[in-house]
Amino acid sequence: MDPDNGISHSSGSPTVTAAPASAGGFARSWLPPLAAGFIAVLVGFTSSAAIVFQAAAAAGATPAQIGSWIMALGIGMAATCIGLSWFYRMPIVTAWSTPGAALLATSLVGVPLSDAIGAFVFCGLLILIAGATGWFERIINRIPGALAAALLAGVLARFGIDAVAAVGSEPGLVLAMAGTYLAGRRWLPRYAVILVLAVGVGVAALQGLIEPGTMAFTLARPEFVMPTFSLPVLIGVGLPLFVVTMASQNVPGVAVLKACGYDPPVSKIVAWTGAATMLLAPFGAFALNLAAITAAICCGPQALEDPTRRYRASIAAGGFYLVMGLLGASVALLFAALPRELVMAVAGLALLGTIGNGLAAATADERWREPALVTFLVALSGITLFSIGAAFWGVVAGVAAAWVMGVRR
Image (cartoon, rainbow, N blue to C red; front, side, top):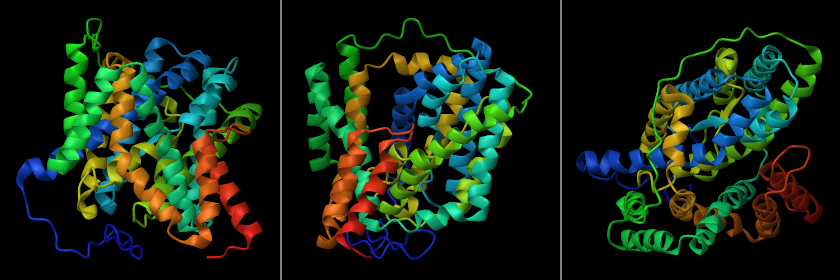
């Protein structure tokens, strides 16, 4: 039982020991999760969409095919977010594989597009097998809770640091948002993040930082590419794509849900993301997986105080992903119109409470304090080895430190 939020870890979905909050109408029940879902999509898209475009261009995709890639990914994320969250009543947020896209941007140069699509199908099949056989869940369940909490804090702390650093380039905008957050936490805690976003957009507009003049939205169209299977491409592209997706995305994704007090059916969720990847791969969905950073926005108290209803935030995120998918690559114009500092500030402020809870849980047990700090620092460092990100190496370093120090669960 988590003493801070009253969530039970023993069942498939959290239960609240305190009395449920009274109904307060649409504003109290839906505005915070809608805002959390929108911010999750905003942060997720602006932080990595350019990498997806680079990956598609490296494969020789046409502008229409690039739009199809975004459409397939958006629809895949929408379907899995909404379907899994509704069925399991948990804030399950999925995403495209950002490290996978970075890998593809360099490894797909000179690879025929049909062979690249075949590698995507192969990656989806491996993800499906990893979920269906249960081996991934058996591994992930061995990560101690203190290290999972430290991993969560380390992954998210970079956004807090970036929010502070944004003061140097846009002090008026960021300080106005920070002041709004503090005032909101004092007098209107339920709507603090919503107010931060509204004030940020308003101040940015007054300062002339939003440039919507070139925006012209068109609906995306699916572009089917028949996959072909080349053994060198399957081994050189498909297999590494699977490894980095599982290690750099699904490991921290599960850790975020567990650190927020949920006990997700990992095998089933991973299997569904693999199946969705296989189905949508011919249209450009290279890898779907559990989200980490955007999931933290939806599963924290800023989404809703009642943890049993925070799945509304991930369902809202799925709705926004669907809109993004239908608009295809042209949706980039909408997010590109917003100043980078606004996105950095709203992400850092929205994640502030989750970072604090993660650090508190990571250091609560003195025996695990140093291994947890090792995990936190490595995850925060942003180091990448063998195309695998810092989140995975943070867990490895923390487990190694615990083993050397003789710490046991």
